Image (tube, rainbow, N blue to C red; front, side, top):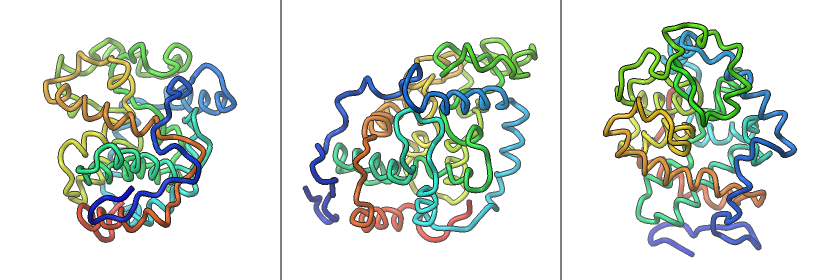
Length: 283
């Protein structure tokens, strides 16, 4: 299958080029060979992700002085990363980037910026290669500064040692926020979503607002899938929610052990990078 003016789409041999239909097998947090690793990652995250911690990380990484590199170099770095919070896959994150992007490309051939979002969405995980622990980079995100809601993964067994929940400023449903203040005014747990969103703004990526929103909130499963945290949302959040949910279908359901032939796909995505975020970038 080819697209006008683009390189041909390339699928692994003998693989159905559609998203997995066995959707019930994804995000299984009750059993499976990776469960102990996943639970440990979330236990550390839910213990240490506090308002003070998140503010320190914004200050630490907000100058984007970690490294100068291109998108290609960042993708190559993810060859070294296996996400310890992911119960679904045990292969390097770089392949997942292309699986997501290709799924979007098949379904939305006219939205090249959306294809690029698929490639970019997890590049913030380079923070792990900068020495950050995985619990401060990967996994589902959630607002700090208020009580975690029901659909947060492992909520009932992982937050007992989080000091914010003993602080009356942060332990109610609204916590330190005003009703319907908007997610842009909420301090999310620190991780690859927020870092990549801020990095894209700093480097002036020319993607549409929907693309920035997908990057920033794609791991906020308690909101876009669990239906929680409605008390913090404003009209803009609800208008953007369908975009985040559309992205999530490809982020989640394109995962499979049959890995894409990256070298054949790269020329197409390099063209998108040259269009929307060219050159050497500040990370």
